[in-house]
Length: 155
Ligand SMILES: *[C@@H]1O[C@H](CO)[C@@H](O)[C@H](O)[C@H]1NC(C)=O
Image (cartoon, rainbow, N blue to C red; front, side):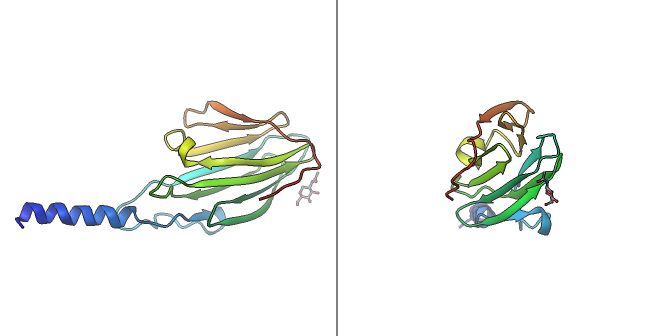
């Protein structure tokens, strides 16, 4: 092999190794910045805001195939967030049960097939009317309706 070909092969190996990371979620509580190795890869951040007013809390519990982020109670104007890297197959999916006094349901809050290219800072606003998803242009382009309690949460 010529030197040029050796460099190409080496580059391909480096790129392959760098992209080969198991899907993993890191919640805010044990945030490890810049843990990507060799090449930095972009992390996706999902943030869910409480805009319910009336001092209402909501409870959120998110999971992916590999991670269970556990239940969290979010107070008025607080937020919940986590970050992760989309897996190399583009199949990353986080679904969350969200419930508050008058509404509940299980929603896909991050789905790579839908959201890759839509947002890296994926915002959701929990409001009385709906659960609204915002893209990186800060446009709300997804609206989920609430089911009325009592909710049967299967997840
Ligand atoms: C909201 O959550 C806090 C902390 O868990 C709790 O003390 C408070 O009573 C809750 N408020 C309502 C309206 O449920």
